[in-house]
Image 1 (cartoon, rainbow, N blue to C red):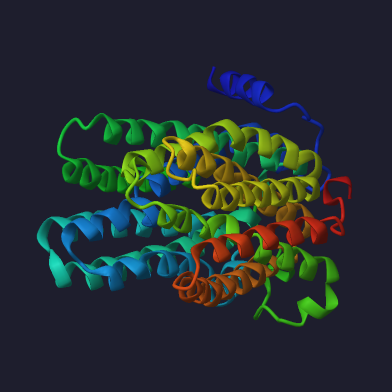
Image 2 (image 1 turned 180 degrees about the vertical axis):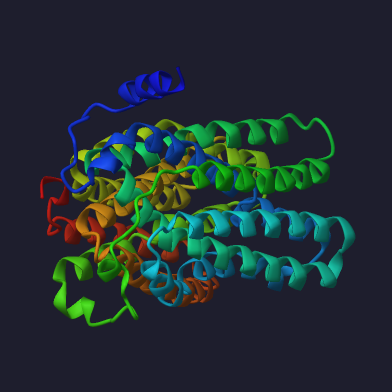
Length: 424
């Protein structure tokens, strides 16, 4: 009965059900069930991400606790670089394991424990004491996330066919967005104490990470051959030897503006109603809901085109921000929420396109190395670039946004030279 329902759901969500010759027969037989396990576990993880978003939720929380601008300013760099930079160290360990799902399971549990500890710290600390403790716990959460990130693409590649991987992540993102929208709606209603709602949401995030870990633990993953897993380190020489990988990393690095830009949009008019936490969360979640599944389906056809389209869309959205700022219209009601909504649609395309392209570009022997090297370099770009843009913003916020727009357009141009890996 359960197998029949699983197959029906798989049939509804997936168009191309042709067997992937790169998957072993056992993986092909288990693909329908594994596909849904990916959707459920990744969806739970993405809901948790939305409920504890450092750019929005934790920034508000530290401000409310009076932790100070220094610690609040560290949240996004710590979260982003901490999730990416450790992967050169964790990837070789993961690559040697025959079954790799347990790294994601363990990482999800640690993220859940870290989230619960953040909520407890917020309930028991305030002022200068709250800042370093919560940022430190976020660093632990980010490192655990790096383990999940380094292992997930390889797990997905081993258990789901090439033409269906983008759909799996797209469905998970869209489903998670519904939960985050409900959270935003609760904040917007003004019902209940906002601090209580935020703390409850962080505890709920911890529960979702635990649930995702339990679900992925049931994944039917075949063991990897010993010679495939025997990787000692991730060499930077890959950048010289694999020009397509180098081009992909350049494209991904240029597209970081879609992730870094939202706080700068808020800086343009911090006193508007858009500054409300609920409006921020709603705009971001709504964009994920309406676009993630579409981006996922498009990525399964051509992740190269998705990266191009997302880059162009992000550049256009950011140029509109600058134009409306100079026209004096940025403070008009609903203007900033709509602009953020458009930018986040682009961001979802970047996330889905880059994930699908990397998995489909790399073979089983290369996937872990490609993931770790790409994430580490982009982590450095985020850390160094993020600090540089923050300094530049003291001179001109529109200038920073303009640079992000140029980066998006250049990324779209360079992405035109990427291979159509879905046709390989």
